[in-house]
Image (cartoon, rainbow, N blue to C red; front, side, top):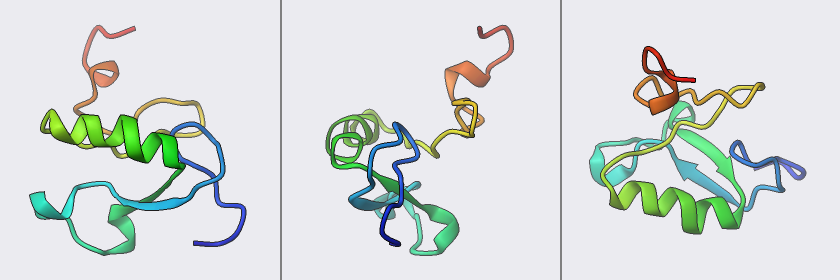
Amino acid sequence: MPSGTRCVRCGALAEHLDHIKPKRLGGSDDPSNLQPLCAHCHNSTKQAEEKRGGWVRGVDAQGQPLDPDHPWNREGAR
């Protein structure tokens, strides 16, 4: 991971290269399945979401979740 890479969730300096779809759920090491995360987002938020059975794909430049199944992306949200 290049120096200065930012967390896709909060913008802090990234410390982890995270699997978007966890390997235990069939995710690969392909670059399209990897995202930079800071320690906090990786060790608390992302891990808690995985324990609930989901995964997160990060957000776009406006902060909108990229995961099409995210509640914010459902019809009538917001």
